[in-house]
Each structure stands twice: as structure tokens, then as C-alpha cells.
Length: 132
Length: 127
Image 1 (cartoon, rainbow over the protein chains, first blue to last red):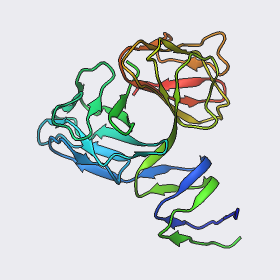
Image 2: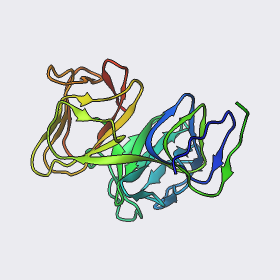
Image 3: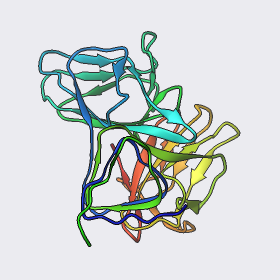
Image 4: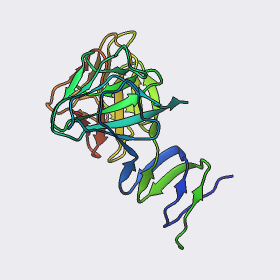
């Protein structure tokens, strides 16, 4: 049965599947995790924003885990380096990564200063979205 | 209209959602569609992510169609073979694309672009 729900409140739902368009007249905020050390399988199953804090040393991201892809719905992850120190390296197709990452040119990506990337999980690989 | 809170452990489905704020305590997923042919009018009315399958040859995106202002779209090269070309300000593009340096973008292996629509042009966010 079709239902309209209009509220000035803040609905809290475990999950929302929107079969049409979502118009957000404000901010979109996703859950965040912070990564401090090199990883093969950092769990991103419940996050949209991944902050990488390399203040304690360089961090290699060889792979992730928990990425979601089903029925044409694919997880997007915003990765942001939040420390100006050291280097965060996104490793291309690492042999040790659980959910491996494919970079645009097949080379590892070194993020300096406060750079970031957007990634899309296709069910097999995380794809780094970058034009050049 | 009275203020209401809706709290549920379930997964409601809506045809659309208008919200002042959207707090995601989980992941963000978007509808994704595969495209394998060149086009000047890639219809972006029904999906947010477009995976380009260039297995059979180069695929050129000269423009999009049916975008609405401030819409976000992701275009990703799905296969390593051939090229995906994002054309800058292509004359025949329906909703034309403007790239950061005014040159066409060639994705030769993987990678992709994030675009947003101003109402007049699609702008590439060079992540």
C-alpha cells in the first residue's frame, strides 16, 4: 500500500531503501571510521567516510573488507587523509588485500598533505574514481 | 503539521524522500547501471553510478541527459580494455560536460569521474 509520510521530525530507521529519487535539502553525513595503520582488510561495512590519520607514520591501504554490492546497489566510500604528515598509499591490486583496490592507471596512489579519493565497490574490487 | 519521529528497526521503502538532513549511520549505496556504447545523451534520470564496459571498443561520453540541478553522478571505467573518453563541451552533447582543464579526459585502464550538474553544464570533480 502506498503511503506518504511527512514529518518535521527526525525519523530513525535501520535502513532506508529509496526506489526513486532522494532530494536532500540539507547536509548528507555518513558514519566515519579512522584508520591509523597499514591494513589489508579495514572494515568499511558501516561507514561512508574513511579518515586516514598518518601522523604516526605512513599508511598503506592494501585492501578493505565489508564492502557492499547487491542488486545494482554499490557502496561509495569517501577516503580522506586527515594528517599532513607522512604518506597514505592506496595500493593497486595488492596480493594481500581482502577486497582489493584497482587504481585508474594500475599504479599505487600516494596521497600527500590532505588529499582524498572516492571509491566504488563493484562486488569484487574497490574502484578508485579519479579522472587522471 | 505536527512533529513526528519515526523509529523502526525495519527497512522502509519510499518512492522518494525529501529530508532536511540525512544522517547515515551506515553505508551509502547508489543505483548503478552498465553502459557499453558511446552516447551524447547518457540518461542519468534513473541511476547515480554508471559503469562503462569498454570491452568491445572505445566508449565516448559526449554528454548526459535528464540531469537535474545539483545532481551528482559517478562514471567508472569497468574494464581495462580500450578507452573511455569524457568529452569536454562536446557540440552534440545534450547536457554538455566541462572538464577541469578544458580537454577531453581519457580513461585508459580504470578510474572514473565524479560530476555535478549546475543546470547548464556537468562539471567534473577531479578527485
